Length: 575
Image (tube, rainbow, N blue to C red):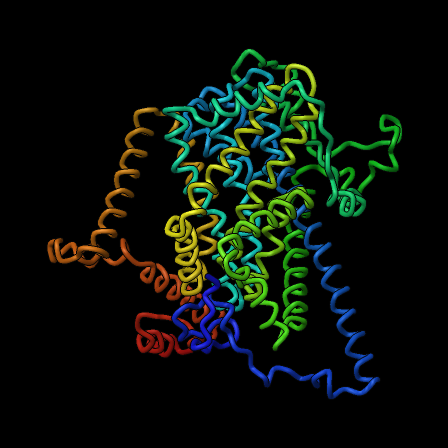
């Protein structure tokens, strides 16, 4: 159901005292924030000015959205300049890829490094077609690419970190994608290792249609953005594929090609003598080395992303205010009329598929609607099916590329593309149709959103831990098979015990020993983030008082364990 309940008066952005800070339908707006006259009370001149201002704001939104999408492209290019060759070398370690967990982590890490699941998936397909890896490790790497691509909209959610209420919802809206993908991986990694359902189903489908006509290629979004982005930077993505192919330990190893690929720049090389289309190939960063260009582009793209996101959010907030906002929220977040209400979520899945196919990027689509979730225009319950649709829609790129392929590569490409497609479809069938299953990723995302609203540094820690430290640690452990098995087994056992104890504490606490009815038996640092938060605040206080020579002033929302103690320290320091 839509969850409409007129008896819940909420403040704009979700009240602190509200029973559900993620409820956006029942929010009431502050009439004092509306500075313009109602349309019915305006004269002809005032109406003309109002229409002009609205059209101007729409133009600002379109320009900001265009530059925002371009900034995501620049961010991807910057990561490829800085980490593209490293990503290729990670893929080249084909001897460790037969472990499905390692394949999964490599898929995550490489996709984070190149900021594009399409690029990492195309590298995987090239490796399979070259015989470097088989289809089985490729499947686990594709699952990892599905997870790695979600880092972009999680980074975008940080743009609303200054507003606690918006940040709570934006981070939850971004991480619901992560939660769903991780849950799907937890189901399909062991299932695929034991029974290989994705491999078998994709093989049957591939054999039935592999003789069909070649498909085409859709580039709706690039038609609009490429004229601008190609003036700034050009990336030679074939370098990553060459390193992955020729630097591997398999039969395709070629020392000369490997050396040449490692020494070649990631940027396209353009000069008058060797490049016929010099005018088309030239760009601003021509002549710079990869590291310098990548560093400058990374900083510039992040600045552009933050500026565009701020302008976009502020302009949309000024447009979507008052009763217009209430009407829009109710229409977007309400269900279809009875008896078709249960079809609403599936309709939004189709919308997510269509929009992602249109823009040819799940990262762009989900990153574009994440700010709307933070503003409260789209609820978390609506973001979830849109995210599921984008997961399916992003496979269209690989499917079209597979259908356009020819020769022996076509069958392999098709099978990898179908594995990716069925992985996402089966994930939806498991976690969406049944309401209680649907709640699992949504509740997990809400928990992450609430934690981030309380401890804002948690968002950065989450990004570093999930997308860097965990993949790198597991890859490092993989070089010692016995140590890897012990560590992974211990972690899985620990997770199982924690989940089981939580379930027992919630449903049958009276059956447990008194000591196990709560988590109080554990030291506080093992069950709460507050000790780390307090330690960080003490370090911040020390830097303010000792280095910056500023007096201690309690910031609103600051949660020091002992404010009086902090003030005493500040006085003792003579500040």
